[in-house]
Length: 222
Image 1: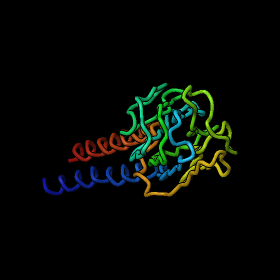
Image 2: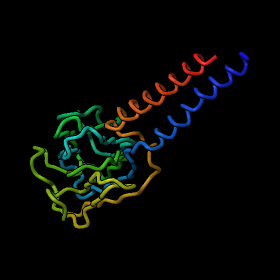
Image 3: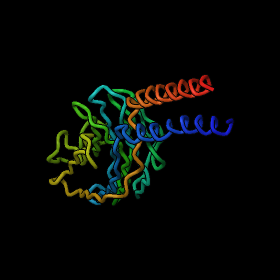
Image 4: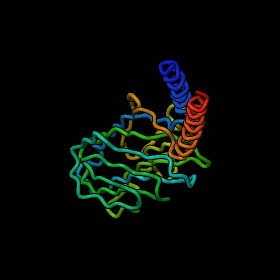
C-alpha cells in the first residue's frame, strides 16, 4: 500500500516539471546577434579624434544591452569618458545598457590605419526601438571627422527591432575616404527578457501550488 501511495505522489509531483519546462520554452527571448566591425582609417592617420559609442533607450524599458569586445587597433588610446550606464574601457571589453536614456563611451585617440571590434547586442523590440550608433568625432568630441549618409554622420547604426539582427544601417558614402565593413558571427545564447521573468515565476509557483494540493489530497484519501 505504501509503495502505491509513493508512486501516486511521485507521479503527481512529477507532472509539475514538464509544465514548468513548457512555460520556460514559451517565454519570449531577447534575440541577440554579433557583428564584426572593420574600419579603415588610413586617411586619418596621425589625426587626434574621439571614438563615440552611443546607446539610446528609446522605448523606456530596461531590456537591451550592447557589448564591444575583441577591440583591436593601431591607434593610440586614452582613457575613455563614460556617460550613463556604461562599464569597461577600451581596449578591454565595454558594455552599455539601457538602464539610462543616454549611455555613451567617448574614447580619445590618435588615429592609425585601422580599427576593428566585435559588437554583441541583444535585440528585444520596443516602440520606438533602442538604438546603438558609432561615430568618429574630432578631439573636442562635438564635431564629426567624416561626412556620411547616415543621421548625424554616423558610420554604423543598429536598431533593436526584433528578428535575428534588428535593423542594421552601414554608411555607404563616407568623406574623406574612411571605409567600414561588417561580418556576422555566431549569436550569443538568447536570454529571457527581464520583463517576462516575473510571469514565469508566477506561473511556476501556481503550478507547483496545485501539485502540492494534489499531493495532500492523495495523502488524505489513504
